[in-house]
Image 1 (cartoon, rainbow, N blue to C red):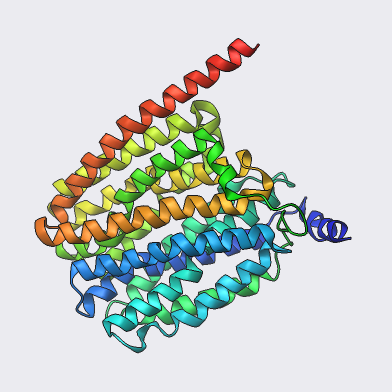
Image 2 (spheres, one colour; image 1 turned 120 degrees about the horizontal axis):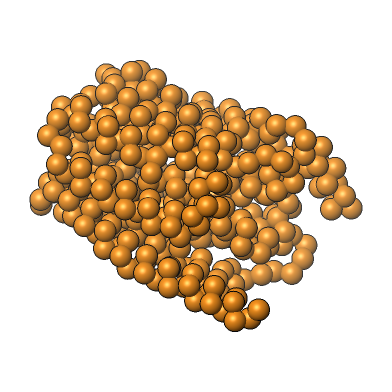
Length: 401
């Protein structure tokens, strides 16, 4: 009976465009367009050192490493993954509105940790629900995900103008966005947890996929450098002479630069393969950090941010779609969560904590040089490993024929 009910709820959506998902991505990433660039600025304005800022920003990923595993398992074992998403959005909204009530260090630490317990699992849960739904339609993930990019871009610009004199407004705006997101989830078709009422599958099964492990390792290395960028580029931008309005426009450019890849993502991956796609992205990422080290003026940062479309989105998209296609359906939510733990959790901790500590010693500018070198070394190591694995797999398949 559960299966039949699920089918009735889901398959009427097969032939019409999934506008609910498009709006969900647009609004959720629009909210990220507030937090990602302006949270470091807020923490800087209330008087925290770069080491403290880096530690606070790393606290979120540390909590996420635990919470994403919990919520990923919950999603696989729940009657519907939609229920888990509703809980996550509700918890997020309740906590973000409490954030600006005090600037005490321990208060900020506590609220940020609790907030991240819910917020860090929203994106992998949305990805899981969306990708599973799209399997039974003719629609592609790229254009849906692109709505998130557009939402991020425009919200960043608008909030940058609004918060020019008061960054506290970001908490109210983000709270309202979360409420609208929550309302949208009630409009989505139900996506069931595939372990609900059935045999439980251990997440350890994920590690038997050697290629997935290597892809996650590669993503982990590059996300360390991106963790430093997200944590300290806004502060570096202000050092170069920028303000909140200019920062909003810089992030607007960065977000819109993702559009070309999202429009042609499937064609690119089908043509050159996921490994070469990621290697190319990692090289572009490392070059980007090198250029940020070399610039001397705030306006030179704008064209550099146009390279963003060759970096974060490619790793995010490739890993999400690979997991959905190559992981057993009983572990898809757990697989997305594990990727989040490694790439958005542990990597961000290292990027924020060590990046903040070293920035206090050598400065943010020189840290971009060091993360660039780290990126190039990662390309060399993981590129060789993945290409070798691909060649061995092709050789085995050929001999098997």
